[in-house]
Length: 231
Image 1 (tube, rainbow, N blue to C red):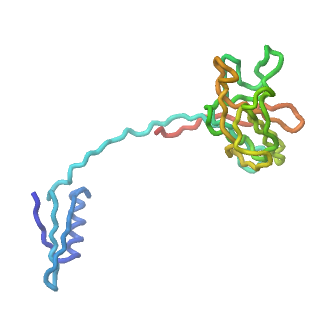
Image 2: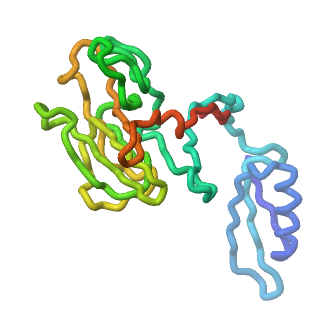
């Protein structure tokens, strides 16, 4: 039931509101109508729905977030400045085994006639691929001489003396561009047309020092699990 409360002045109203809000838990709806009155005092009509109980509220209690372990990659700091110098190009785990073999560095290729010279990091076709090292785009080429759809981006970092090549990318950069670590360089290209029947979509990353043999990228990209609160 609605009722009216008359207060002598604004100070009393403030005191009353503080006391009432403490009782009602800040859930009380209050409408204050100010009317002209005598010069010495104002008449305030305070109307509310209940004098002793807060308005009904619908509360939904969410369960506490559960901690989950997330796989991440931490690049090695080779120049000693306290910051990583390498990044995972897709943010996903290396390709393990599918109908075309293993994606690990040194895995058998062509019936054992040659080793795999890079690490395959799994990707979703169309996802962003990022620069695994900072530096300059020194080359954009074709992964295969007979296929102009599958390209690679080469990035050279003369400061730390490394060159990285990321294959199966639709580039968004050009030769001569300056890149920072983790900056997008293009999107992952699907591999089903080239390798039907079970090839896992991925980007192939090669890492080397100029004039030297390829290096296993997992030596400079250490994977580890971190605990985070789930969504």
